Image 1 (cartoon, rainbow, N blue to C red):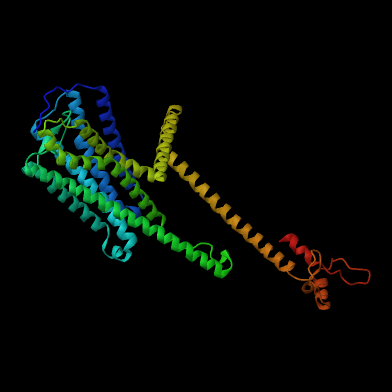
Image 2: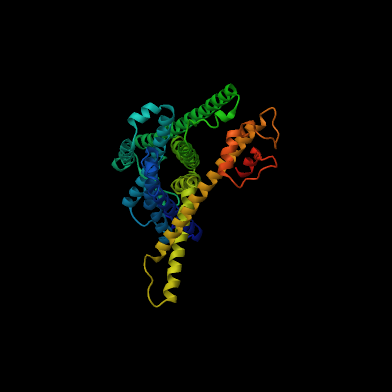
Length: 436
């Protein structure tokens, strides 16, 4: 077990960086969990977002279990605990790294089954299955990561003495086997995630292409797009949103985790022989790889938040509204001796919302009536101009009054104007266009 006897210098830059990463990670995961909790009921009940919630909780716990130890080490300029704390820190790094990878892989498999095997998905995959997968994932990763504590592998402190991890330059066969085992499990999870995402992407592109071909053929056969203004999409907007969220989280995960996985294999394959030959290990590359991995649980929740920008804006709007109501309430308390009613603001706000809703409904009804009137007038005009003998000021044959109709009209309208011969003047039908 390597020991770093040199004392750690308190570097303000490293301390500020670690504290900032811890704060951003905790804040991001808390916001992601809150956003998931205030989402629509049908979205919260989906299998995919159950796994997303499990990912956010896992990242939050991983950040809270590891970052404070690093910050305490920089503050104290030494490792704050003994071997037990080193084992706990190393277990946390191993567990939350592999658990997050496993949940991301489960999300990719879930999307693959939902898109490529919809019938099987509808029959067997639900929230209960998602919870079961999370439980199995946690148990399996606990078994995998606790092995070094029982002799199968080693937990050691790494340069510059601020973090502990598995011994990836182990000289003994058991330590080397565990390094390859952990690295192999991570590599398999990464491969399955990438393959499932590629399969889902290929299926979505093929579905959209087939939908476009069908839409074009139907429009050509009907000789008009008005008969088929819009065909239902194969995939819903929610599924597309899930897909893009998964793709972005996978990209972030690959950028942050691949350096660590590569470092595990490189160190264990070439490290022991290089050290035996008198070489000095590349501790800087080790530190860079573990720092890349530590960014993954910090960036994951912010990817989700940015993908759900509408909910973020809605939350900011609610916060501004609440602050404005509190501010208005404080002003009212200063200007009046008697305290205002606790429901006055809510009531006025509700009445404003109700009035605006009624005005909106009335405006919508009037617009619909106007649209119908315009449509009726346009249809009548198109019908008239289609006639061969049409003239804008011509009198319709069907509108001419007969002798009997003239008598009825005269009896009903005694004050109607008559000609010098005593016959009533026939009204023009063209005036009806002026009143429609």
